[in-house]
Length: 264
Image 1 (cartoon, rainbow, N blue to C red):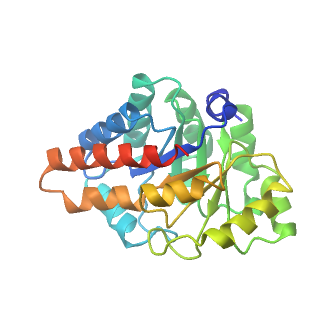
Image 2: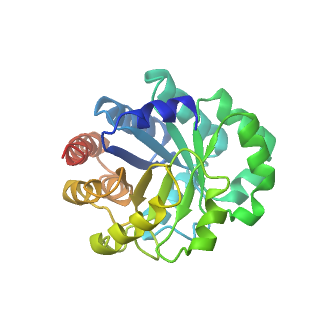
Image 3: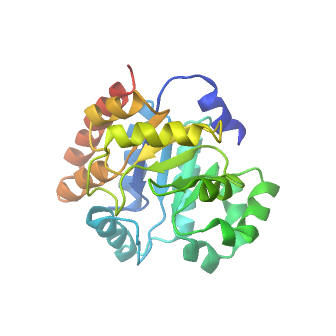
């Protein structure tokens, strides 16, 4: 685990992770959204790397990714967002989330080096299977960056052991099968799954997918180490494209509410 992520999880407070698509609706506004999140003491920020075929993302985040791509947002822009966020709060963990093709097209070594230079602490690569991660893992370990693994409700014991082999930082638990933003988490099923996973690892487990508001965050945090909220934030962006000041004010208010949900 990177030192910064280690510091965040050293205390047992519940963690709030928020997601934005880098460059949606534009780079300047993305920077301002991240600034609001930092001001509201969000624990970890995920920046989505726009991709043309985001298989795990629901319509809200797909549309967000498309808006960013239409603005010609590229990985160098995403690195600038990470750098700017780190310059505002050095101890803030920054996670990049996306798809492996984006990294392969950029070049694995170049990508990882730019992560280091720009203050990225870890990666969530949605479509990277453990059987295919050797090339990336080598570079991440050399540079002390975390690969945060996804675990789903259908992950069995053998698969879990394989996933955990190179997992670090924390585990991202996908609460519902399907795409982001489509359903709500089943708390009872989640609790059973978390007990099963904790028998095999001491890594923090943070559920995401289907967590829409502060009440959901509170319910999830009662049984997990924190919660991830993404689609609900992106929806605020989508609904206020014509009024960015209102968009920022709504995100400010919403992320304050979400953070309150972690305080049990």
